[in-house]
Image (cartoon, rainbow, N blue to C red; front, side, top):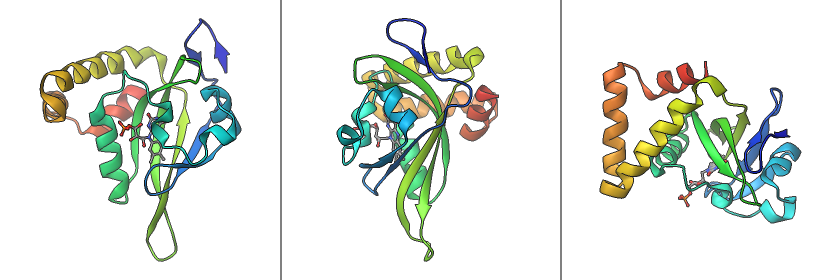
Length: 167
Ligand SMILES: Cc1cc2nc3c(=O)[nH]c(=O)nc-3n(C[C@H](O)[C@H](O)[C@H](O)COP(=O)(O)O)c2cc1C
């Protein structure tokens, strides 16, 4: 973990930030590096909704995709900008997955996050700022349409696009 300027935290190559939630998205576990980067003590995070680290630059549509995927039993990869306790931020490439018990029931969710590919981060920053603009104008329907059009133009799925950006 390195702090190059006052408010952005850069993850190290080998950092893996892990958290787990219950079915409603309340935090049930975080590893040490997650707490260190987020700037919280464990007791400030456990039991809290995961949006405690939400950054205002994140479009709503990304979280809708995330929840739709994991609730249906599937994983998702997403670029996420999170806010730290003291008002800083950090970018992660996150893999969010349902935890499934031996009867096949979803019992919670967990996320493993790593360093983003800096070379292509500008693509995500531009995309997210366009999505937020669309959401301000026409809500999530509008950002969903914008995202779908972009993917259609590129001839790729969301998963293919995200994987290609991370490289
Ligand atoms: C396992 C898991 C991990 C999550 N991690 C994050 C995260 O790191 N940052 C974040 O903003 N939201 C995360 N979320 C999504 C939040 O639950 C929430 O949907 C999001 O912050 C948007 O907040 P809002 O629904 O109050 O607008 C995660 C959800 C799950 C299930």
